[in-house]
Image 1: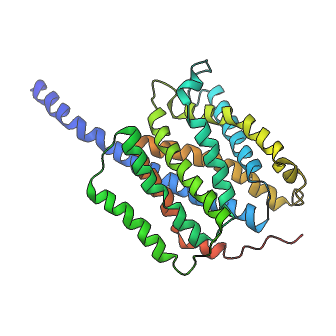
Image 2: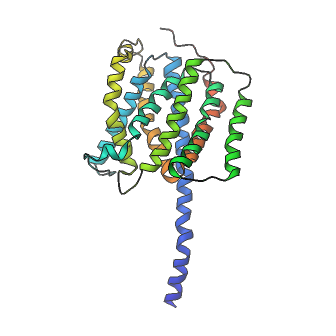
Image 3: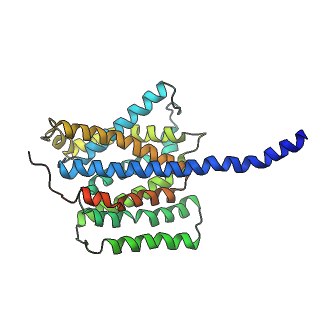
Length: 293
């Protein structure tokens, strides 16, 4: 009798184990979509409404927030990731380069185009991710999924058909952001082995390795000087939104890793693209005029 009960329990275990996994997949996708949507809103306000001239400095603030939050959490034993050793850069490569490229191109592209056109171009992340997952991870997708991906692209072009203004600089930044986003998602999925760095280690060391080179880039391009001379630093609302963007930067990076951990990189790319199509973005940020001082 006991053996029969054990056998029944054993038979039920796989199904029971799959249910939390499905819940985790859905919740992680929803979490990522929400963080990504909020990040676009806040960054759009900073870079266009307030006219903040330094997207690289904004990225540095987001990296610094990520490092501090994860390090304090590790010290308080809330999370765990391995201590630094000489093998970690090898384990991470090329993620740090993709990480900073994704960060800077994403911030630089936000204010260059209208939101309808920005939405269309960002959706090219999806087929790029599908291609890279096939090449790098060896994952195969069915014909129905491939057709669905290209239907998303066609639908985005139809939706933005009334706003096809050409901006070469904006196009370049958005396409670079698409490439970096797709590659970052695929390689993040590849590197998140719990026996190695784990999701927290990937986040922490990515930000740690790239914050100094990004700071040097900011100084050499004059981006840091523009940030320090910006005339809104006495504006309390601007400072609150700047700090909120830094915190959301951490949440976005964490939610991206979490979504990729529980889902495929393609799922993460699709969720990230969906949030750009929300009508609320267009309604809230229809004006591109900076705040007058």
